[in-house]
Length: 127
Image 1 (cartoon, rainbow, N blue to C red):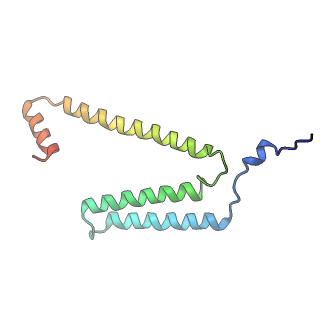
Image 2 (cartoon, one colour; image 1 turned 90 degrees about the vertical axis):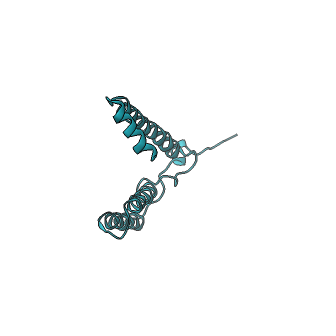
Image 3 (cartoon, helix red, strand yellow; image 1 turned 90 degrees about the horizontal axis):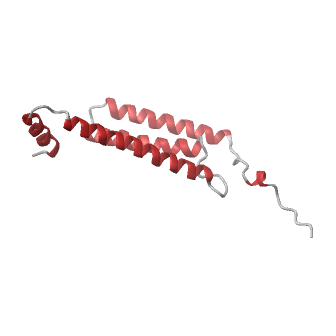
């Protein structure tokens, strides 16, 4: 009854990565950075469109870096790196949006006169 199982370490070997993959990632990030710069400095886009374009390019660049440099999603089962990344992202989003919510609430509560409060409400609600 010789049950020869492979050692646990061999299941978690890093994926094979080539220089070509790193070069593609680098060039992609470079192109995305230049595109974001052009969107920021050119007058061809409106203010809102430029912000949307820069945000979209940032998300795409984040995905490229996660796939090409951190090799997220290319590991074998179980996907510990992916689980840790999702947990970290959730915590960061809670901290960032919670902080923005608290600061916005404090900004509202620190106003002194009712005229400032009415002006703030009018500006925020677009009335």
